[in-house]
Image 1 (cartoon, rainbow, N blue to C red):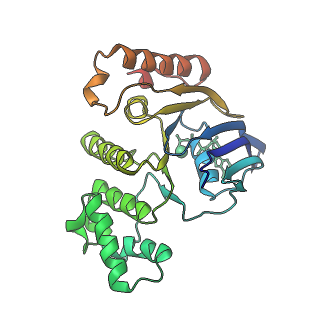
Image 2 (cartoon, rainbow, N blue to C red):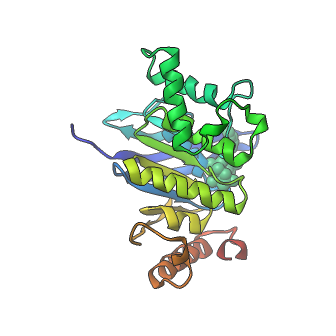
Amino acid sequence: MIIRPLEITSLTKEFTTPTGKHVAVKDFSIKVQPGEFVSLLGHSGCGKSTVLSIVAGLQQATFGGVVIDGTEVTTPGLERGVVFQSPSLLPWMTALENVALAVRQVHSALTGRQQRDLAMRYLSLTGVGEFASQWPAELSQGTQQRIAIARALSLEPRFLLLDEPFGMLDSMTRFELQDLVLELWEKDRRTVMLVTHDIDEALYLSDRIVLMTDGPEARVGLDLAITLPRPRERRMAAGNPEYMRLRGDVIRFLEHHSKQFSGEVAA
Ligand SMILES: Nc1ncnc2c1ncn2[C@@H]1O[C@H](COP(=O)(O)OP(=O)(O)OP(=O)(O)O)[C@@H](O)[C@H]1O
Ligand SMILES: [Mg+2]
């Protein structure tokens, strides 16, 4: 089987607003290679989620689009697992039932017991097996997000699409979950697209950072290969010359291509 890249070609998204047409993203094109970890980075409102949700099949492009294995993406699909900023678990189901519901979509031939066993395996994989019988409302944000990651992985997707999955977490929990995602990715090298506006998060995790210009008509501004060796260590952020060079490139881009730049992102 020839495994082809995921291709986003001339993706343009227009929204109709009360004040007229708003072209959020224009002519956005990238190819994502199988197994690659790519981050989409840019200021708030530049169009990162718009691009990711079109890849997820949750929205349609106005022009251009996304092609996987020669087929245009128009709907969500089981080969694409999505995790959002908010864990969005079903509140009336336990952690285990939330994951088992996803398992059922992929393994409908298994018995209920087998589906629950498999769901349990994914909960254990993301470190939350002990919370299997608890309700989402009883659990911390970090634990809920681990369950949401287990749910996405249980689809055994080729692509993991993550939209600021660590955005609502405190910094220690954020570090733990970044490490979890990195560990899982290193194990099976699923293709990951991560939306973030955290420069250090993107540098720590990615093979490549795609920086978007500010909208309207946001596009790819800089496509930066992250050549830092793996496995990576968080402390490389302090004093590693290559890290500092890449970080400088990102910050300079944001300064020069963004109307909204504030010192905040450079901190
Ligand atoms: N349904 C919609 N209708 C009209 N405009 C929209 C809609 N969805 C997004 N937009 C606009 O498109 C632009 C891009 O939004 P998007 O949510 O993709 O940005 P983002 O980079 O993900 O931002 P953030 O970092 O804050 O999540 C914004 O100007 C937003 O207001
Ligand atoms: Mg967003």
